Image 1: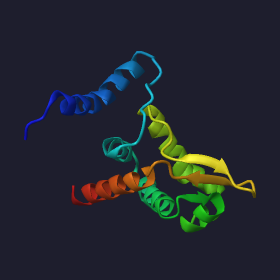
Image 2: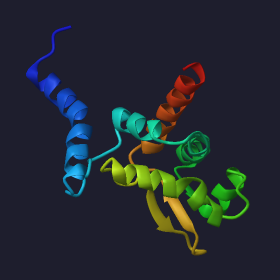
Image 3: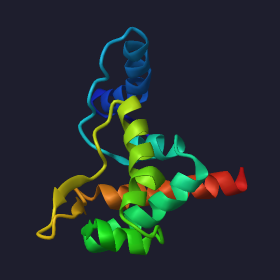
Image 4: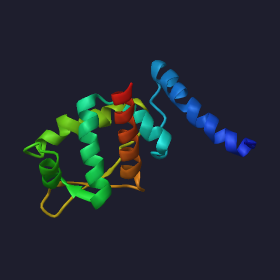
Length: 144
């Protein structure tokens, strides 16, 4: 397969970006924001997650992909977490922490519904890409 400089440039940049971000982090520089969650970035994030968070992320992003927006009460029921307050410790805080460390924004948008509950929204199909990466990571861990 022949690749042009236009093809290789973005591939090299994606490969190099985590190393540059880590070096900047070690030097005390704030992480560089990454523009979006492509397949590579999604795989990188989910690789960082612990098994229980990874399993919950599958439920979260699966529901978000299916419905494109989900409120906290519905999500808590869907994930069998009892109350919406448990979503933070069970999923969103660990995902936010890993995303920040990798120089990423959130892999969802947030709003508030008319009842005042948190509303998660899929942005640009990220939920589907995250779910694909989660499924691949679960298979890798099961086989590996």
